[in-house]
Image 1 (tube, rainbow, N blue to C red):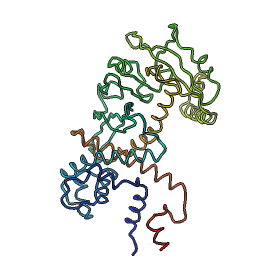
Image 2: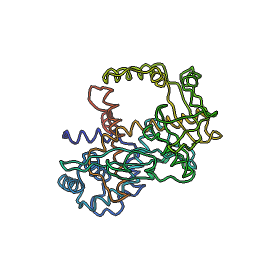
Image 3: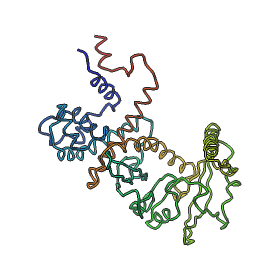
Image 4: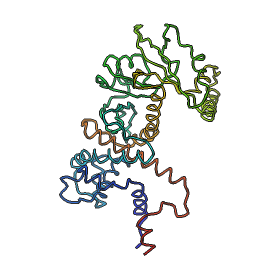
Length: 375
């Protein structure tokens, strides 16, 4: 029996899913309460119409009904999305582990990864929003989700957007590297690890003098080696915030690529590159208040590397998230939506990776087809 192109595409997509994707649906009770169609496959296909194609809940319900996948209202679909939150989170966790991102570890210790992205909903009058979210590692649980407009006071990317508790360990990218935001975390008695540029923070060394970047960075002569120095930064009121600068030297190939990008950008903008800019591009530099007694410079950079591995998926997520209607009034639905978008981003990354490994038949081998051919 010949499959339609649509069914063939679905078979390819299923081949990319984690092996335990159906069992996880049962384990997390994603189908609990369904009276009619209790097919895990049909539920996933219905959710993907909303999450991957970007249709509203109402249009998704109509399309699912026409495709005979599900017969439910948009309100019922919203409730099913909420019930699927833990399932979608588990699928994300499994797919991260497939990528070699180690998310298993000490269950008594977690860090929070902060990020934000802009979302424009479909249509000529589609609203523009900024979502601020926090994902915990290693559990990969979303513990904070906030939606703001993209313009106006108090809407920008800032550590101040997030609730921070005593003892929180937070990792963020360079967009969050501001003295006021770092002070916010310190005031809440949390710890911060943030990538920085020497231009966006006023850093003083332990003697109270401006950080001598060239002298310090050139102490690291070998790729992959890291160092740290005690420093403090100054906020707008001249307040001292103590911490450490940690830096690691990039590989020669990474340095070459970074310099190439800088030269291209400077040429495009008609700018003259400074020697210190080229120097800083040879290193990954972070500011942290993580306690040195527990986190050596190497350990700090390992944690930041983990953040960067997940950031690669966040980048794809930010592209995909712009397709679709964002649940704005319900935390559970919003978190489920986030997990769904991350899951699609991971699927997209895996599909792209497989597409680059060209095969004459156009897709991966299927276990079912293989067993039948041997029969």
